[in-house]
Structure formats: C-alpha cells, structure tokens
Image (tube, rainbow, N blue to C red; front, side):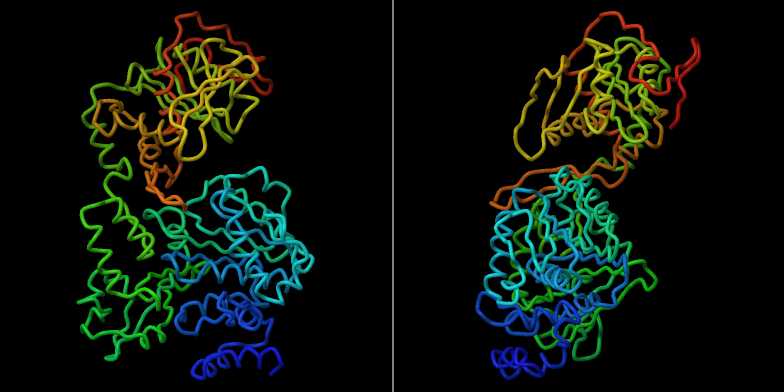
Length: 551
C-alpha cells in the first residue's frame, strides 16, 4: 500500500477501513479507486461511497464497469431520483478519463446558463480541494473549457448547438437528458462519433414521462434494478411496490412486512431484467437512500395527493420513475374517437386555405386547414414539390418554419410575396406573445413554443371537429407524440415544456397552419411558379393530376 493510500485510511473511521480495503484497487484502475485516493470533499474527508452518512453501495457496480478494459462504444444509462450521488460519479469518471487516456471529454447540461454555476460549485471546487486535480488542471478560468492533463474538458449546454461543432471527444456525459433539447443532445452524440477511440457515453437523468428520454433509453438496456433482501430472505425492489413499500414511516418488505434497516440497504444487489441488451442501464429511487428517511417520503407522498403536477414531480425526482397525467398528451385513442365523429374528408385541392409547413431532412411536411378543419396532410421530398401544394390549394396564408433549411425557406417565401411568412420558435420558457420583424425583405414571425402549441392544440382538446374522417394514421401518431411536461426552474418556479415521444412533424405543421389562420391572408392571385425556385431538381404535378397522398 502506498503512502497516499495510508493517508486516506488514517482519515477514515475504523469501521470503514475494512470496507475501503475491500473495494479500492490500484489507484488508477477505475474511476472509483482514483477518486477515493485523490478526491477531498467539502468536509475534507476522502471521497467514499461507504462512509457514513453518505453510504451509496449502489454506485459500486456502475463505477466498476468503467475501467481500462471497458470496450469502445460502451454506453451506460441511469434513470435516477435526485440526490443519489450519480452526478459526482459522472464527474469522477470524467476526471479519471482525462488523466488515464489524455483524450478530450464533453460534459453536457440542458442549458448554457447552468454552466457557470456548475463549473464553479462542482468542478472548480473539486479542483481546489484536491491536490491531485489542482496539479493536473492547468486552466480552469474558462467556463466552457477546462484543461486537465493536457486534454480538454468541454462544458456545453444542449441549447448551444453551434458550440458543439468541430469538437471530437472520447467521453460524453449528458446530465439531465430529459431536460435537454433533443437536437442539441443528438448533436453532441455526433461529436462522440467523430472520436478516433473510446466513444464512451454516459446518460443520466431524472425521468419525465413513460417511453421518453431516459426512460426510453433505460428500457433499451439491461434494466438493472436495485433489490434489497429482508431478514427472511425475500428479494425485492422497493420502488416496484410503491407505496406499499413504506408502512408506518418504515421501509418494509412487501412480501412479509418485516422492517428493512440501514444494514439491509448496504447489502442490496443489482439485478438485470434483460440479459442480452446492447448497453447497461440502471434505475434507482430515494427509497434506498441513506440520507432520505422513509417517513419523509411518506409525508411528501401524502402532500401531493390530488395534484397531478406535484404527483409527477414526486415520481420523477423522488421515485426516479416516469409518470404521465391525463393532461400530458393527446392520447391516440382520444384522437381516433375524434376521427370517428368527423363529418368531413380530405380534399385534393381548394382555395383560400391555410397552409403550415415543417421543412426537414429529407422531407417537407405540410398540413392544410380550411377554416379550422384539416383537409390535407402529407409531405413532399423537395421545395419544388411544395410549390405544387401551393398551386393546388391556393392558400390565403402560409407559414413555413425557418429551421433547418434557412436558405430554402427564405427563397420559398420570396417566391410567394404576401402569401408566405417564415416562422421561428422563441427558445426558453418566457417571452409570451407573437413577435414580427422584417429580415431580408420577408416577414419573420416568432412565438414561444409552448404558447403556440397550447393554442393550436386547444381546439383538439375541446373535441372540435378538426380531424378528417380519413385522417392518415401518421397524422394521428405525430399529434400524439407531443408530451406536455411540467419543469422546475433551478431558482424555483415551474413552467411547461413540450417534448416528443416520436416523429412530430405533422403536429408542428398543423400548429403553423393554425398560426397562418390567425395571421389572416390575402386574396391576391397566386404567383406563377417556375422550376427556377431555388435550384435543384424540379418536380411538378401535371395539369389535372391529383396530389400523391404519401401517408
């Protein structure tokens, strides 16, 4: 045992020393061995997952899976409750990775605005407290980039996609995945693919709703659950039997009712529900925490009864489970019921309609409204194809999203002056109301994402006869993909945000058509459209041919 190991043992209580010797190996063999030898916490004690009161035995296996023999492309997913020590594990993994492999790493949070506080309180403080880290890091002043052992530790927000360009990293940590913008989170994963080796990925988050984000990722992995064994030998996962896992303020075995104490919590085991998955996944609740009393959870559970929003927060942050209320989405069965009551069908053409377009790669999706009713939904593979849709329906007003085909969207708007306005979502949870501005001779309309989607979906939620009786299945699937989730700001306060559970292009196209109707329109003649729109291949429907219903 080296001098540094002896110094660590001297700081530990006698009861902890045997545990420490058993679980800590060579100093650089894995992230936990490294952290336990080198890290000092705020109380000046060495980092330990076995030391009272922060006993976290469930971290042992996730730590050990990261080591020198971990294969390229390894992924770990952690669906967790709050305050269980996984973020500290992620930081220790990152520090160890930089030292061991001298390859760049990217640590991602949902918002760029969170980085400064995170860098100061979690990273800079750790460096100042630990001589090993202080010697390894040569530059810590830059919030977005720390230099450790000659390698870069990039800190980025998922809402800052431009800052992710030209970064190639061997380790990517996406902390609070469910609160991230999907496009930014996926952009970060592309940076991982650009690495020449390792390509390790750690995703961790409190869940939101079933089948989305971290829960979807957990379900795709080994689905490890932390099980405790009672004194009669019954093995169970406490959160699986919630709320019956607490009785009279005590954690109990659901089979025999016997109380489980702190010693029982120390001897839990990870049990995979799926053996042959492509990656490791874990889930954990505060029921096994050494610092959260069962009676506290029971009291908090009682306080949220009757409040769907607070119930969701309890499940997400205390139980580490996804939860969905009836108000979270337009359920598929409900949408099919609306279709069954419909008195109108899709139309192959029209005049004075309202058109919404969600351009993407490779397809451009559209929805046509006649009044407030949907009369067409589909997609075209080119912007020239959208010109055919304009000719067939002669919309009074059209709204097309600016992103991601910025140049093409602007060219499309210029081709139909007075008929097309470009739209861009206002990021964030504030800034309500519609804004307009002139850019390069065209009108740009901006609106808060949640506000527009709330307004557009309100008639559907009221049961208005909007959907046609022959609605394409994809239209219903895209509308049902929107999940309205309550979020909590870091400084307090709550707000709602839409996330998606699958393809949602037609839902956005419908919202843009709804906005086009609100903006009104013009009775001016439709401009003649030629194949010179924006270059590329032109494709026009011959005179008299009906649209191709691709859905």
